[in-house]
Length: 401
Length: 226
Picture 1 (cartoon, rainbow over the protein chains, first blue to last red):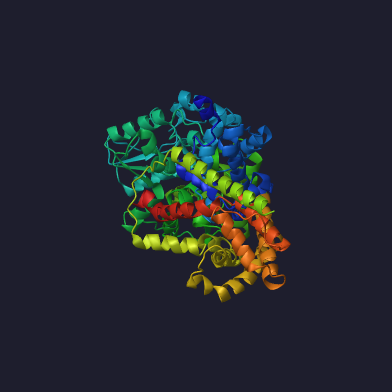
Picture 2 (picture 1 turned 90 degrees about the vertical axis):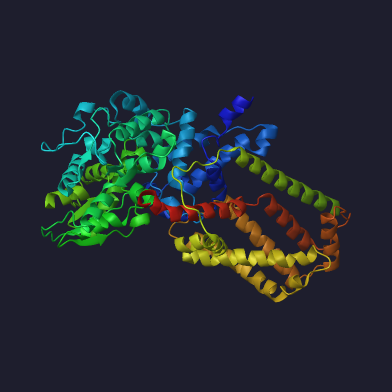
């Protein structure tokens, strides 16, 4: 009986704080104005307040007082609708930023996904194959580990041990190569020795599994990575992928089982510090109008907002433009939450909204600092009538050194 | 009629208390969130800021100042009216409740207008006309509570002594058999019970969520900048 109730329970994957958040939602609907999925689908039935309403219904019909006394059943149609809505979400967290009672949706949606996975209802489409692929290849793209670092500069020499290490991440290494190559070239130019794990040892950080609610492999992946870097005497781990950085800073300690033996830094933090200290200087004039897009997991996720701008402003001749929604309020480019591979059309439409604004503002280049954004916005740009060249921030900087 | 209203009141109260108690059990049973990082302790100024943020619905102000005006006036006037109603429940009536007389009268106008204003903003002005069915239902119930109360007070006065005896009887667990001879009052009273039975959970949970959110806001930069 207790076991079956446990299975029935919809609150099992949520923390106490998240259950309070569910109750706290006033259904005011302010978040709908900031939801990128709403921007491109217009379907309020799958909006953030409706997702919360549906989830409350599930809890009520399985764990509510009435259900406890008289029994209850979840409406299967509602459950089906909810599953689609929760996996269609890009988990960008814009709804949480604007939330009038401060619900941390960027953390709440992944936990609801975890519950759907536990019930065998999610994930959907190719997301479901990810754990097997990650276990087999070490990355979610089913690419051989041997191809992971083919883009590394030939003259790069990596010490076995160093205070700094660089983690390229799967999306960068396989889908946004100019970006990770730019990272390494800039790090080389700064001159601080850094190490890397081997292509076989640098496995997925766990984010795609975490975000799709498939948590079984996470401890194994995280321990392998943490122990790998600790073994190399690393004190600071650098990474340019906001999703990886988020996973490392927020969730690695949980899956590792304690504090990490090194600190995590986003590459823009390290580079802007090097520029501030005079260890890196761009001398070339670059008279261009650049518009910078804040990745959701970099701004709302870990609060890195000023550093990318400081880097761009340090380039002589650059005129920095801003999106209407910037910093904590930035609009998702469509690449987030592992939804882009399943709800491809939504992602393309969202990416085009980003391109539209950059185009309207007459930007010469659209600057990104996330491999998922880089990959998806480039895809959205393909055969689109409004064209703005898309460049990663480190790719740009490396080209000017 | 008196017995029926008393029974309905006890049922609504019992259902409410059971609902709250059960919710509390569910929360106690849930696992506490494990923060991945240790965060600095917050001082008394932080607590003061949080209280002010809750009292002035600061997050709503940041999201939608137009709606905030209506919502804040609605919540503030609602609280004043609830306190003013204590004169029907407490004997002798405390001086501070008597002193709410003028404020209470003003609040009764603001209360009704603020609900109409909220509905106007949500359903007419906003580009995105979202309103949940539950919120619409509650707003209509609350508006009718306000309207019946306003009408009793200004146009069809009910016998205050009867009302006080009736309500006092219910709350002292010695209900009277009869009900006050005012149909408007009976409608008003039933609507209050209906509202009570459907009391939105955010009344209790939102202040807690706002407190957590405020902590997170101050900690966001410490995640990678600490």
